[in-house]
Image (cartoon, rainbow, N blue to C red; front, side):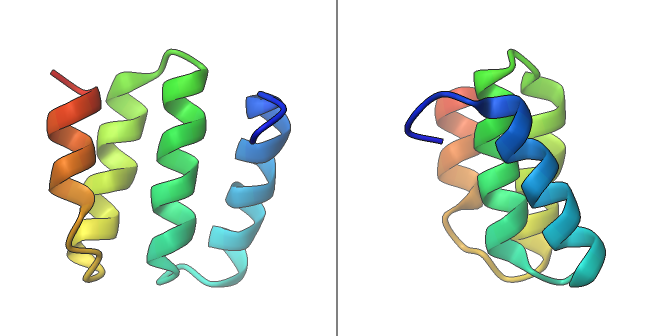
Length: 67
């Protein structure tokens, strides 16, 4: 993601989530790719899923990027 290839990164995280649907960090990172792709609604949804899976910092990302 450092090279700002958000589309490819999102596809990679999509694959990770398909392989392991309870992988909270993949949802978090896919959320950041969606922010890079100007999809705040999608990012919020991913971060809410990560929160349900136990990723405690998800609220911070929602508050910072989705307001």
